[in-house]
Length: 249
Picture (cartoon, rainbow, N blue to C red):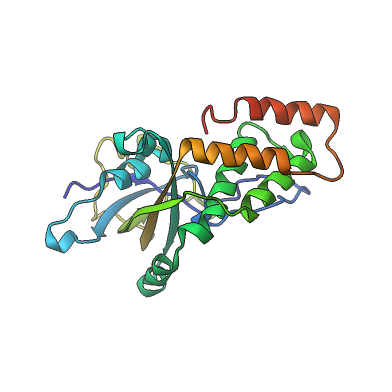
């Protein structure tokens, strides 16, 4: 198998906050719509059916490398939005139970809410200030909505060795190939390189027809009733996002 070096995804708070400003909500791994890449590289050492000559599905490779938008570009999903639920750890049995218990009907609202949250938060340091109470209300509404049409398409697992370059204090730091830290594109990393840890990563592919998702979201936009009402400037900011919501969604 061609080893696939990928940027590692860590659990992050999608709503970053400055000192003294706690984030309203922190997303879990399985809720992240398309997590930002953080310092580190990994090499896949095992995956489902590898021993039987199986291969890694194309959607998994694309998602690991570039995120959901590349998966949506596949012909099979061009009329559907793609969501990938993710969970990782060192306990294979526990992860298998998570995989088995995942329900598209029950778990999709969190995936939808996370991606909606990411859309409103794109390029906005403090969405609560930008959009007022509408922001928290729409995210909570998306989490509580019973979305129709979500389909669990596939699932897969990989095992990977992870390399994390750390600074003198032990915190993850940026990779610097010029200082000998490694370069994925140059092929300097291998399964024999020194890695911090080895974990399993479980992925579930969920899709929903684009027009169906959009109609339900537009209905949600109309039904939310934030209190106290946002200011005039905040309403204008909300409308600007809503008018172009699916550009880059």
